[in-house]
Amino acid sequence: MNNLGFCYENGAGTDVNEQKAFEIYQKAAAFGNSYGINNLAKCYKYGIGTGINIQKAFELYYKAANLGNSCGMFNLGMCYENGTGTDISEQKAFEFYQKAANLGNSSGINNLACCYKNGVGTSTNEQKAFKLYQKSADLGNLCGMYNLGVCYEEGVGIEKDLNESIYWYSKSAAQGSDDAQDKLNNIFLNL
Image 1 (cartoon, rainbow, N blue to C red):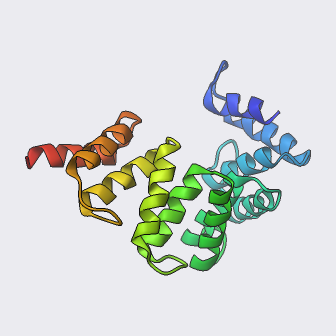
Image 2: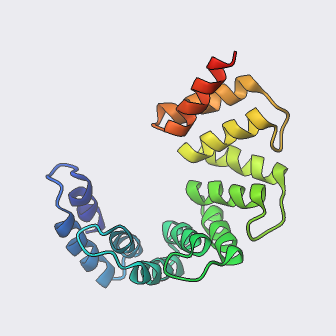
């Protein structure tokens, strides 16, 4: 049922119908489907087929996370980091990114790396950040690839290596990262 909602939300095999997607996600959530709950939360967060309700989005992300959904854990971490529907808590953001990462969620791994790089909810550890960015990038995560490029360009947790930086920015740009494309443009303008 959740997959049908995805089809209506994204126009996969049918016309986009956000209202229908929202209704299907509601039904999936009512059956306790953690993916449906997570997607319903996204609808409330961004106003997909319904009005924006940040508090409801937070509550649903919390429910999905408690059901073991790694996307729910990642999104809950984002809520805590940014104060979306709740108070900002860097410690809780770190904890939920870590839980998502432990389940192999590439976005959770990337954001956990950001926590280690910037000291969000934990102490700074550039080597650990680099290794996590590498893991996220190896899983095909667009942001992980971009951030790994930054590590190689700036020498974060690893020796500077412009060729590796260009490689990872190129991979990220090929997946649609405008930031990575901007980095490549700047590098090539300054060569």
